[in-house]
Image (cartoon, rainbow, N blue to C red; front, side, top):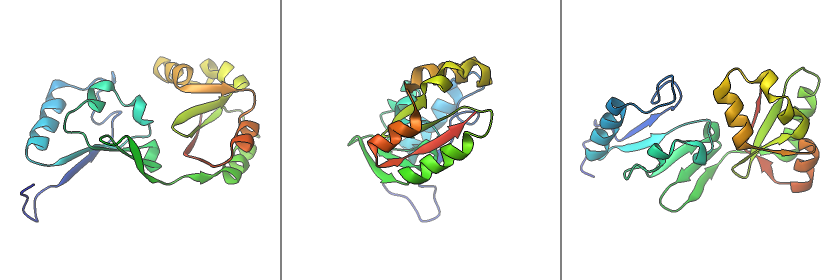
Length: 167
């Protein structure tokens, strides 16, 4: 890479409502802009709340994509090696404490652990009541694995949680 000190070296961007349009589609104009930047030696880094596998395939398959910041910064993924090269996770006991507090409210919640979405079965069953639109409902149905009771499942698994989210 032959960059001068005042040149752009990296472009990090959100997906939903930024790179992707309202229909969650990468426009040809945005794709061309990323390709042009990559040709100039600039690192292209999607930065998202999604798991890496939930990034649209078209973006994951960019030949110039090397890194992705995922799960709201909880993981930095190296596409070349397939490894998480950085992790910032929530200790399991703290995650369970947060979820126990959330149980007081009329909401549903889930978590990401080990690059997989998990949710209590009864909450998963109620998703259509809480999901704001068809896209989010589909995301819950396809990207969350229901377990009988999430907090108990986490206690059994141990380790840490990458993200907690609620609707």
